[in-house]
Image (cartoon, rainbow, N blue to C red; front, side, top):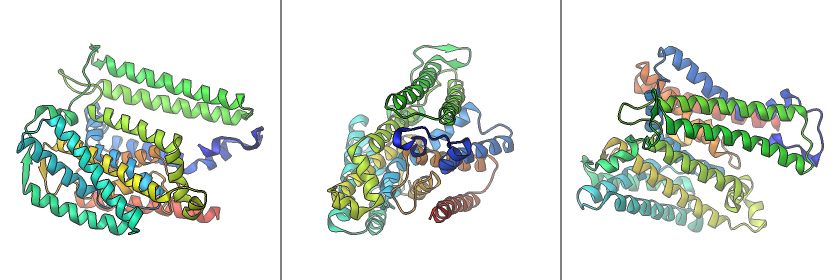
Length: 407
């Protein structure tokens, strides 16, 4: 995190825990809010929220938000928006269902076709936004109406999915190749252990690399990094326990949906933090005119952003159709609102230029916990929407107020 690296490669004795906390207040505040929500609903639901199978259901039911928020956060960072992702999910899902059930295309070839359709839709939006100059709000609003209409014409009422292999994508688990130890899946325990070891190694290698580069870290900084590592490892251990004890006598452990999300998370975190394209996205969002003057092809950046969004929308459509086992014209309603809300709750700046993939994922989990917890309490869907709206408003208000204070 930006507040964790000392400038001028020298010791800053004034970096206390209080200062470190203030530098990263928004980022850690989101994590704290998620933990508080989980504790509240765990108590309010008499422990139902964090039952192993309930936790897996939380991931599976909110997989579309987690996937869509990765693309949406990059678009918002670049000061754009995409209001059409929900309609795209319905349209791509409808085409996918027609190919499998009416045209008898093998499910894996239908998936490849669905991804190609998502990429083409991304090119369509990117062309109008980047090269014609129509604002993203207008272009994707038109796309929302266009693809919702097309999905209604294509699908009609519904198209059931009979392919068990395709349905396994959203409801299946990784094979239990190492068997079980009591109620626990050994593969899940191994993966969780490797993640914990990787987190520890990454943390201490980062500290050693900074010291080797001549950056003398204050004791408070080292302690802060190690404390963050310990909390992260504790979180990984707890999630590993829940996953390892989930499922039933036939299968359990790591859901395939979580594997898909994990791979996409790793890819897009790398893209945004370690590639030229990622740096260009932040530059364009921070100051588009300065980016142009520095030689960045901002039109190409915008075009690529919507291609990425189209790809992720197709993945969300595949996962959603696999889980629902039926394509409908009304599928994906309000998906764009959930994805946008997840980004803002996760710390993405309203004005662009600031945001992270991990932050958006945490925001998506906040939305998911709210959905799951309120549903377990028997709260009506109308109140769930109202509460989510208030949470979004509060998140944006905090961002704006903090900016005014800094100003």
